Length: 185
Image (cartoon, rainbow, N blue to C red; front, side, top):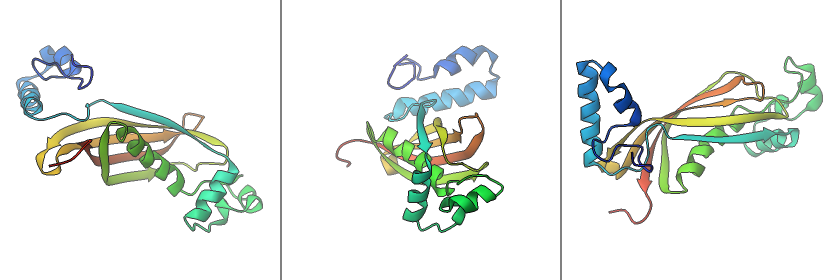
């Protein structure tokens, strides 16, 4: 297994595809072989299954500053007394704050070894993010294939952010292109 690609250097299958091969039906085997053939022909930038994680602390001053920066004037993000009297009992972050940080995790990760470019994001806010929450953010590559017209891997990811209680506060999906570093033809 090649540690940088996560693929067998001989057959271009993943470890899971190799391990589960005997349980696959003919259609699944055919699909795996087609994917392996495509992998064999194309350069690889991103590894399927690759995961990314980061954390984010949200003290009250961060919530207020971010909301001011993006011109979100909702008093739930600025006014302590107003927010404490609300159903939330404290300041809450603007939905754009955890979302922006979750998206930035991808750029920060992939830019260490490639040139990432976001194409499409799907975001679902599932729970309020309160002042002093600490978020565990994660993404996992679920699909990646070489796209010659983009000179990079077209990558689909699933992500989420959980608060310190293990509750999901954001669910996300993303499609990005990850191109090799250096001059592009």
